Amino acid sequence: MNTESSAQQKNSRLPSKLITAMGAVLSACWAIITYMFPDPSTLNWGFISWEGFIYFCAAFFLMSAFFIAFITRKMPRLVKSTVGIILALSLALSFFVLGKEYAKPSMGFAKQDIIENNTPMFTGARVEMIDALRVRLVNCNIIAQTPSCTLELTSTNGDRKIGFSSHTTFFEPNGGSLDLEKIFIGNKESRRTYGIELAKGLPTQVTLVFQSTQNDIDHIPSVKLVMQGLENRNQVIKFNDLKSG
Image (cartoon, rainbow, N blue to C red; front, side, top):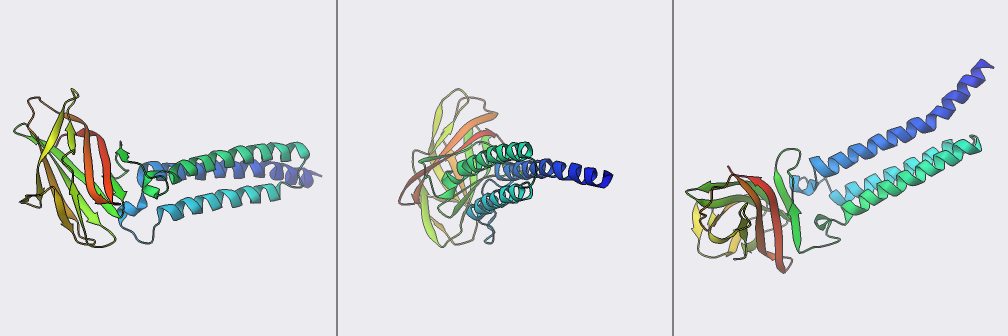
């Protein structure tokens, strides 16, 4: 009798343990997606696909729900109903989160004119991946009242030519904006805003020099990059909340 009672107690606890485990996995996936690798393609690892990761998570949650429903099919009706409600809510939440991530511009599903980069990755890097171009913001400096930002550009799908529009802008804390004045490729000044040659897989350092400012700046609200040669139209990437130096 005690053995049967003990077995029933274990069976009644199993769904709650599985649901707790599912919630932990969902939280871990959300943390990875949001803070560690917002876009795994920025790592230049060909065997990692951000889209594939989304599909894997969706399949995992769905199969977990089926498994939990299967093992609870012979339990009392109240337990089954409770588990069913929790499973439905959990699946709705997980697919809502995955759907939001899938619709981001980096997925190529919902392209937007402006990509906002508000926080660094877990490693501290500020990186965006668009049209197979990896854009990493190395740093922004203000020397002799002249702001400049250094970028590392890497083409991942072949040799290409890109450029920066004259609308590329450095924003000051007081709301003022400074226009792009010069572009350096490596240590050499470029005479053109368009025509930066990128070799496949080779990181190219590009420094953007903006107009001089009359203000003392220790915090940079935003730098707006208006890039040409991507997807046959201008693409805007904004790096927000930056530190000088």
